[in-house]
Length: 133
Length: 219
Image 1 (tube, each protein chain N blue to C red):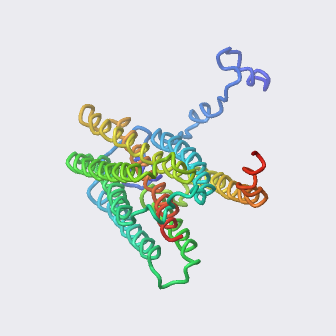
Image 2 (cartoon, chains in turn yellow, orange):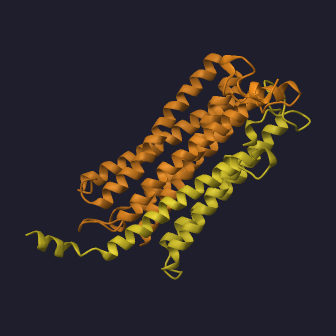
């Protein structure tokens, strides 16, 4: 999150309590970053909504395409809006993010996997109801 | 000083068991990272733990999405044009929030207040659309009590909506604090944390509209 770093003319991190305001050029450059992010995010959103309703592509591919587009858009948000990059001042943020992604994948794929197996092995609900009568 | 004495705090009882390496290095000219970076990192950890909580709701929804108990499914209920307008509101609101954080870093009051007001209006429009959608669903008998699918849907989408509502209150608080206290370093850090929170909510919404609405309508 380089936006948290106090900016100075040399490009190095300023003193801990130095909070000089951004000058005009830096502010314009930062707004340019947000504009690029907005453009890419809008493009990916529009493609997602188009793909969901189109009949032009093979239908079973649609969920996969939507997932890929969503992950791409999350990446755009992380880089251009939250400023999570691979810069040297950002290692801790990226490591924490990697750990978070690991936990999210474990929770979601683990739940789907286990619950699909249980659903598959369970007696159909109407038969259970029959036995309880 | 022996190593045992150092571990015991060098004879000072209040230092026992603490790690004083960090403090000692500072005297040798090595500077700790600025407080704004430490605060940002801590808030980032909080956001990631919030994402883990959302992932549990997403997993619940994914497991229960087919359990409609003979009731309506997502294909029957979701109105994609409404979702599209909601998405546009939240994305533009996230962009306006970015402009506001640049504005406060540049100490431009007009940018900051203008962009924060735009962020609030777009965020409130999002909440309004979502509440209207929920009221409509309940009115047509598709409330959270209808089926396991709808319980999971209302929990997941409602939890995101509650986050956005809390974010709107935080936004107003930040505008008031900047107005009352000016561009102080601690206020600046809070505004930047708010910016992270707001962008994070948009990331959750990307997962939400893709997985719940678009996949639900396409399935």
